[in-house]
Image 1 (spheres, helix red, strand yellow):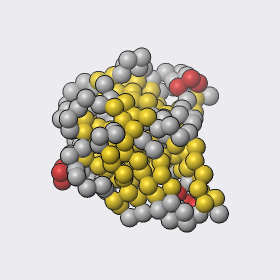
Image 2 (cartoon, each protein chain N blue to C red):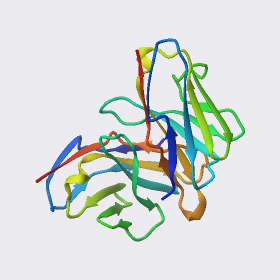
Image 3 (tube, each protein chain N blue to C red):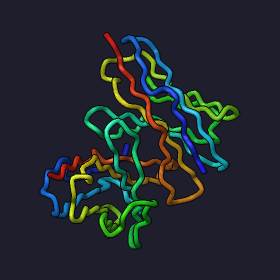
Image 4 (cartoon, one colour):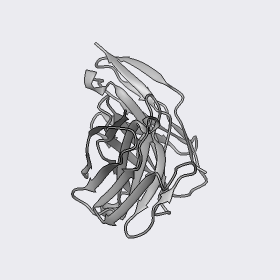
Length: 116
Length: 117
């Protein structure tokens, strides 16, 4: 069974600073994908970044980067130059890439608050 | 990224009525869609997996007769909450799986906030 652990229920960061949101995972699958989603107060789930288990390089998307350490089973999200609009819930999730119909497995989320 | 729409975004209904929520993948075909429920300050809870042309697969504890799911086409899945009660009030959100283009990603609709009076 797959499991995602996000140990930080809430985080604060100063505007323009960088912040790291932790995510560890547990799986016996050989091929899997790791995702980060942002959920603002409006409720929509916004896809941020994806990392495949076989990707050798860490994924980057603009101000978002994923610090993927496969041996440690961690997939931390790094947000650089934080902005007030980054305040939201952030969910780490995993997907088994071999099975076609499996859903994402989510962590409990981290609430990020960016302060001016 | 791909776009998933969900309608309605907000609905208030009386106890005992049925409510239908639509989830559409606008620019890709989705053989698989997922329905989640989210309570305040909690993570998403998977309710069911909706497969085009076949019956949905429900998670343990989710009543299939109460939460009817129909995935009639590659771009549309519907969730009907039958005989809604106040405890069904929640945020319902769907996702559609896009396996084209080499990346298997799930994109979410904007969600539907259901309030049952």
